[in-house]
Length: 222
Image 1 (tube, rainbow, N blue to C red):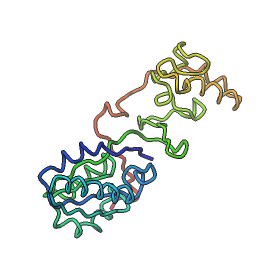
Image 2: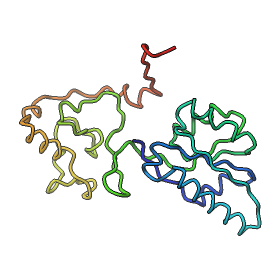
Image 3: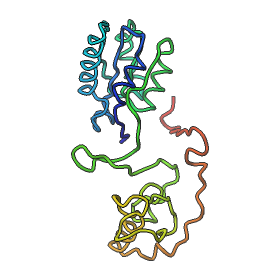
Image 4: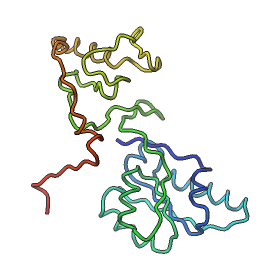
């Protein structure tokens, strides 16, 4: 899932300066799971914004809408009528959600309410960690299912850098060395021979270096 965290309230208030009718758009998927932009967080944010405005003797109207996904046109169409009278939309979706709402609601400013961080997993209650950079050319079959692009701080493709200590990364000793994890995993799988295969330099055009990417599934296209 995409992991995000809500922006500081002072930053959000600055974005909303001058608007009196605001719609906070939560999102029912990833940002709900990571407790950054679901309906619960949106309602709490609305309350905080109202209190802050009252402290400044201002009156603002705030409504909360929660499409199932902000990154899917049909769900945005479902909430369109609720956004007609608002002056600005504060999106608590990820960066994709914000930009898709910009395309759908061209006559209104759509402002970001969260910082999109990474694609990750729920590691523990209230803890999410990055697991994938979406580089577009997955090599997990060679590395025991552990990504060297993401899990190695230096994104090394052919073994560790030599700087790790007791299985911890020299860049950040709070995290495990990615290549130690790969070695341990391949050992369990009886696949240590994989380490002798030289992984060629990566063609980063499949990653963000090639510009905005597209996936087409022609059999379902209209």
